[in-house]
Length: 486
Image (tube, rainbow, N blue to C red; front, top):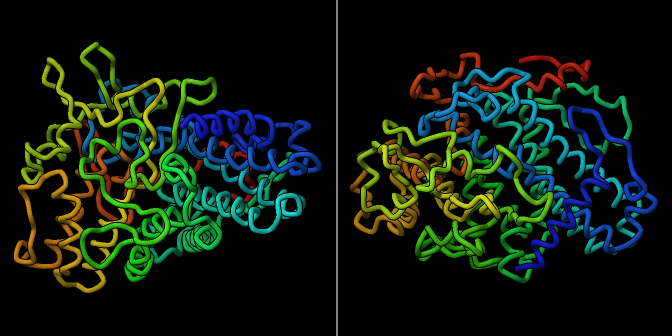
């Protein structure tokens, strides 16, 4: 257990020393260790740089907290308590500007991560492969490309039109695939949404081919990418593109045709009998396909006003929270029974205000979830129904697997659904319940071109309204002379 935490602590230092700081498109001067003549001359230096990529991914402005928070608070299930722009009141209210903390911070951290991956890939192609050998080099390159692909996918969910709007023909992102280590390299036109998705899938396909089937321990199988990580992420990507046949193809690699649903190759991913164990130490269950760990070590924390705990959980000791659960949101849905185990993630204070306590720990912060096996099951279920336009039997069984492990009193049958649309709606409802606080609500609304519902004082947003997607970071627009707005 300590070993992986040490990896991420070392990685924090490696990021500072090696990775080009592309914050606001302004790379920092390179230090001696980041020079390609030395950064790739020893196996241990190369290994440390790989773990540095994970550290960049789990930055507080990215998967260390804020990215997941944005995905939920843009939806209808949370209410803002503080009206603080630094802690995302504008994201919740759907009026974030190009200079907003969220907009500039996520853009900077995601592109910093992408550039770190690019620099690593460039260095391996130039020097590193000869040092560690082709097989290990491809393993490392697969990790870098998975992180880069995930980063580009994540940016698409906020800054570009959904794939369904024009079949990917709308403007997407600057598709930077070479490392930036000097000033004056910011100009790049936006690729289309389809072109960026194609690169994401290229990265994930390479990762699937070259990652190990298993990393050998429960800790490493949770916190380092393996083959099933790439497959699971592809089910998410294809679902966002509404390519349901491809979702099925990918999911079938790690989901058997009938229950019990457990991956038969690679890491034996499966649901946990008790969902609450997924979010408790040691965070290494077979359901957690990919999550990011934290320690109390300097540099290995989400940072001030970034972690999941400070946004969602108000404890009995008086600790404050930025967002409470909306009593008129998913809490009010009668399909979510009071006896459902997932209701245990709700904390009610003395005033009767309810909060999400799925991530109650501030120090060290709870692992930040990236993707779970439950999502793969529901991705497959939805894809089966949409591709066949039937009340698909396997889809019902997959829905039951997720629902009944927390609510054994509810068992669906084909007769429970009069139409395929009814089954799809039940799957979408299950996603809202199952992944509350894990950042998927925005993705689901976007991929289906659905209106973002109103909540509290925040208005609804249709797909044609300003605020439905974010503007680009003001820094990108000021430094990239080839940038074009939507």
